Image 1 (tube, one colour):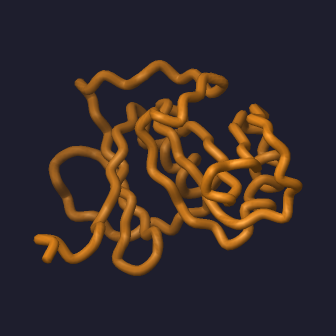
Image 2 (cartoon, rainbow, N blue to C red; image 1 turned 90 degrees about the vertical axis):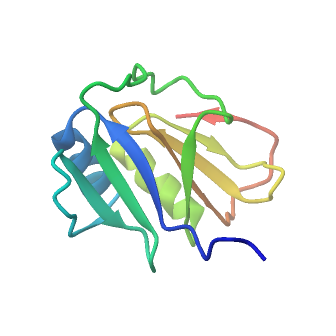
Length: 139
């Protein structure tokens, strides 16, 4: 038997809490939840059920340079399941924010990747109605 029950939270380090709030709260639409006072700035979001995203301001941590057009599937990221990846594609397209779109994947699901203002990568994964052509798109 595994020694844990479930994934509790994912944590990302950012340099600017205001920019992070605009990205995760306003752009992605995540709902902020209460956070204890740890003596350093941050914000928590619910990801549904008991799963949470913890955004932490790291004053002395090395933040990767923001390169929204750079992409490598092996980069650190966390993935959020979406019921309609095509709807997420439309939302990302309307935002004007650069993202990477994969419609022909080994999983059979559409995968969309976007970077937050500090270069942390977020993946949206879910079903698609898009034609299954072999391509890697960068928007």
